[in-house]
Length: 230
Image 1 (tube, rainbow, N blue to C red):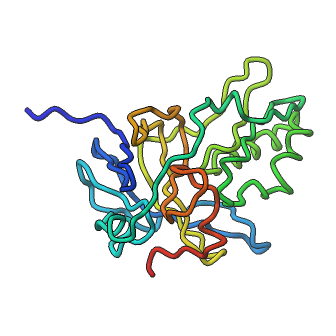
Image 2: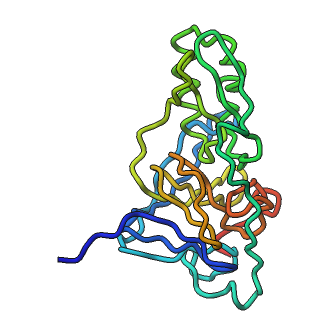
């Protein structure tokens, strides 16, 4: 009997993301409302199940989202610059009467779900309202980077969506660009130097190759109009 590997992402120095443990891979698209504000993620494609696979990190593969070795041809510099500090230590806290909101702006990928309902930060001020509370929880959970986390008042316990371990390739047709890799469910991520990043329920990994916060997405794919079909 073959022992099943634990789900894990290992970052190769100046190379791809090596994914092991039979992690499901799919593609999701941001669906916008009439005011051009994202309101939901919709799965549009599911990739074949595999025990392990390599995902492009440089943005140059001709077989996206998979790696085809292009990183070596373009001399990709994948130097990781992201902090290893825990999210709770660096995030700014917005306190409200019903819940608190933690916000680490360094993790913004420009997904814009936080703009729903006039902005999640305004919902903090009226957080005693059950509808405002529920909307804030929903919006925070739609933030793929984990930048925004709603916490219980008093206990500080995070309120997170119950994600299974999976990875989704994000697309934002409203901004005419392809987005990052959304890593869900607390999959461990190992740096190229062997160090472990904090395990979180949701993070986004850069796949355009241009983030200044590697391996995490910083929204640069928007300004360079990264398209994974070009």
